[in-house]
Length: 113
Image (cartoon, rainbow, N blue to C red; front, side, top):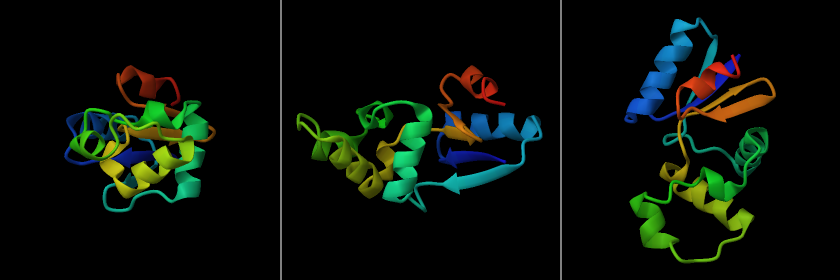
């Protein structure tokens, strides 16, 4: 089973979903703006990605600029920010087994299929 953290309004996320469907991947689609991940789920995603929480933050989002820009946040505070403002999360995130990637560029998705 492949999981995609998906934002239907994002063209890159839609392209990633189309690619996964074309490859015939059995999918779990998580519309993370409607159902934000729990703290534990987000920590697990970050661990699977092998990145710091800051590397998952979209710093050009208005929510970031208005609420967090210029603040020195801890990893836990960054995770809390992404839970409170899920638009801050990079997208799409694709997870298959113990491997995960942010699907930008799209070729990264193929690395874990």
